[in-house]
Image (cartoon, rainbow, N blue to C red):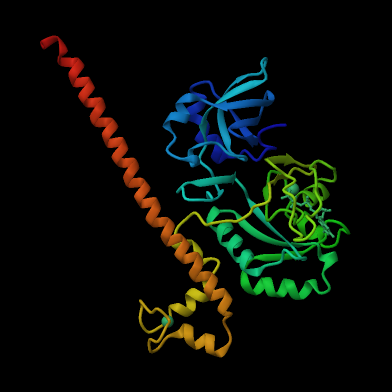
Length: 359
Ligand SMILES: Nc1nc2c(ncn2[C@@H]2O[C@H](COP(=O)(O)OP(=O)(O)OP(=O)(O)O)[C@@H](O)[C@H]2O)c(=O)[nH]1
Ligand SMILES: [Mg+2]
Ligand SMILES: [Zn+2]
């Protein structure tokens, strides 16, 4: 496979120039499992590890390579391995806040053109979760597309499509069935040569079944659903980039338990443009939409033209981002302080050594 077939374009070639001067070769990260990578290069597929220098310079997980990244490598084809010396600037990056108390992001995929946000039209269906996914996708720089899979299990997929279209203005929504094939041609239209498409969604919604159907081959294991709650079994355990016939590149991912936003407050305006337009009409710019006169939000709520659940979700996501921003700032301060301490220590040691002969 050539790098061009892997989606490597002129913008990456330009960013790679400084690495070429060092004799590095470019490659794309195909798979990642606990800091072990598989990269595709002009020498074929190689196992790769991150160079010590890159590891030490990294301030957070975002500085490490992830699936879909274009990287600068020193290759040892005879041994079948390589070292990653640099990560080229990403044109898009899907990430989320790591679950739990730490403030860091987890990268899910890089250099993605389209995000297929998959839900099942069975017990999994949840418009509030879809809103959350759409916000995360817009934030990434890739184009979101909503897929309602398992249409064969739903009596009225078209009304579900209409409902989702109303919570995700401007986003294409497709009802499909990976099992009986309905609606799949609409998805094939996205599979253009060199385009990278990632599947995101809960376990069991059919991401791997869709990947196989679009690839026309049984490449990914698929699993049944748990008895009782109907959730998936977390069958897929690692992220993987899969080149398919026709030239598109699919990234199948393990089911997400939750997606917590990683970004800035402004990122919600794509997803909740309708709400932000209403808020802009409130008389007071700091309106809390409680009892203030001239509140446009309470007006549309009383008219029934705005779903209170959607407003609640908007506020929740906004609080999440504000909270995150506070923690990001705090982390940046701590990192700066740590770096300042390192520099002072370094200067002190240097001065000690420089003048030791005078002592
Ligand atoms: N009825 C029906 N079942 C489907 C459809 N697509 C997938 N399934 C079934 O749903 C179950 C889970 O499918 P997977 O493709 O493994 O789901 P996944 O999203 O990859 O799940 P994880 O890898 O655990 O994240 C399997 O039993 C599939 O056969 C569909 O369109 N209709
Ligand atoms: Mg899977
Ligand atoms: Zn108001």
